[in-house]
Amino acid sequence: MDSKIKRRAILISAGMILLVVFTTILGNLSALKRYLPDQEKTEKEVPSEIDLLAEETDGKSETPDAGGFAKEGFAGSDPTLQTGDDLRAFLKDGTFFDKELSSYEKKLLEANEKSLYFVTTSVERDLRVQILDGEGNVVTGVPFVLELKEQGSYKDQDKDGVIYISNLSAGEYEVTLKEMDDYEAPKPTVVSVKDKVEYMAIPDITLLMKTEADIIAEEEDTEEKDALADADDTEVVDIRELGEEGQMGIDVSKWNGEIDWDRVQNAGITYAIIRCGYRGSSTGALVEDPYFRQNMQGALAAGLKVGVYFFTQATNEVEAVEEASMALALCADYKITYPIFIDTEGAGGNGRADGLDMETRTKVCQAFCETIEDAGYTGGVYGSRNWFRTKLRMDVLSDHIIWLAEYRQSPVYGGSYHFWQYTSSGNVDGIEGRVDLDISYLAY
Image 1 (tube, rainbow, N blue to C red):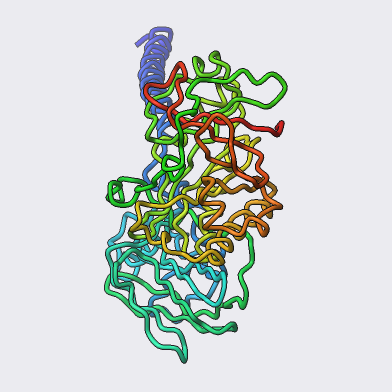
Image 2: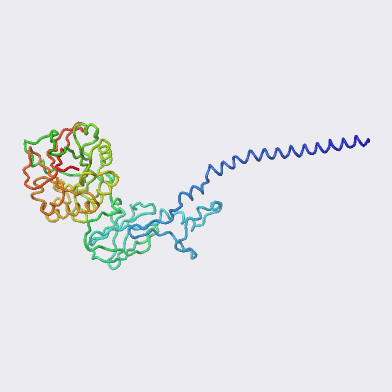
């Protein structure tokens, strides 16, 4: 073969080889390019299950101390596990779920919902222990048994997650919760029982609060207006023209139903005293008025000033502090300008507090008002003329705002008062049916 032809053949062969190699490289790069965006998207935009679970549980392995009782994490029988270890750190391990969980590891996963802790309250020579799960919810439906060292055992008879012990001497007590199936009890803890009632809001009162879905409202909400028996035919049922003599207001509860608050404001009403709740006249449950939040939001949005009242069936100062604490908890999210009142009417004659003596009922009102005032609000007492004359020592309550209910042209009550509810049969545009009408002689 001619040397020139030979060189040409070699060059052509080399070129073909390079072409094949180049084509192969381009194909691989193309495939790699198609793959990389999907992989990148998967890593950046679609978090894995373990990432989500780690984020969800991050920072939740320990529960803050509640009432002196910190939640205990499940420690199992692993001798290497130390107090303070992150028991749920394995959730952040991206390879963890590639292996079969041991029984111990499964127990750790359940610890958050199965571990228990206490919240305790002592008002006066008593102790209330509320049993909560890892999510902060009261555990109901379980007959927990609490042991108070040197005092005995106390069972949660109604299985509501709350055990109340009264008539204790002041001092330190060791509390132990007996082990229950499916739950990990906290370690024994020492608690303090107070000697005398302190008029201070109970921080965890929300754990005791119920809605009407939890009770039989017809049996519990039996408030009766004592002023009706004292009314005469001079009662005025229309909005009054007061000028500078006072401010026109109303007081409302669930019984008034849906309210058009803009129309109420246009009718000349400047403030509303809204029922936030009541204590059940039979069981003593603390119940939120189902229209409270709706009424508060509507009244404030319409430009009215607001106050609050709570219908009491407290039988002692401890329960009065509970009622005031509930009122304060419900009012926390709203701008309260007017007082927070305790409504001391009767409950049909069979209410749990209807038979209180004058001294005890007066102490109940005093405890309620002073707890309200300790929190920075204004406390007040509502009652009828006859109620003030025969059921309460008004000289003891003179430092608080007095709200008189007396249905006549002009009141004949001889004591001092700051508010006057002059009818329960008022007519106000925006409210269907009758409504209570009030005059405030104080400007807020």
